[in-house]
Image 1 (tube, one colour):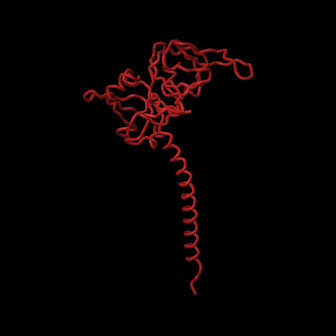
Image 2 (cartoon, rainbow, N blue to C red):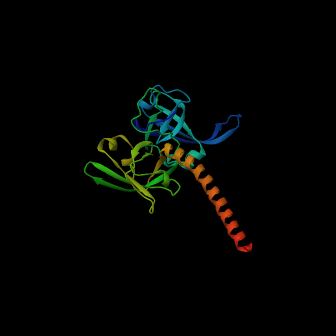
Image 3 (spheres, one colour):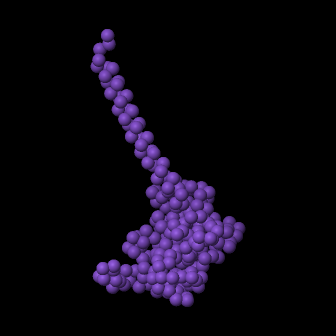
Length: 237
């Protein structure tokens, strides 16, 4: 199950309920965070347990009707995303999970948000809108010029990356501006960021190889050092 980053509609937060009596698997009660979102398209063909991306966060529908659905947000979800910033009336990007026979006009988006960045600046250029977003040093290696990134669940192309100041920017065409929530946010607002998962897998594979090379180089250096010491202390015949 994946998403494409092509937002299907903007929904509106209808209710936020911080419940203290959500039932757990063992029948005990625990605190939870429940979002109710009004929408139209996202509930088409919905079922209990289906996945819907809310601002790029893959969430499980626990209730739905013809005009809305509900999802529970785990503590880890609230720590890693901007969903905790939502209030009643907030607009959110919505996308149903991709069907097996669909075309992917964006990129492979898992709905597993890496972190929440902050909008630093909006700049207009003709009909287009530049958006500059901060990110952490941890995520920087996975964000590259002309690469993909999902911002609040929207598949977008990275334009420039500033490694020293830890930001990247992107450009929104007029059509995209009308379909997603980013232009409706303010400077300083948070946005969910998910780097291209293919880059993460590649980095993980290369990282294992790098660790192996580093170990072999350390062994070689130790061997060379040992040989040099031996040569210095063993008298020549």
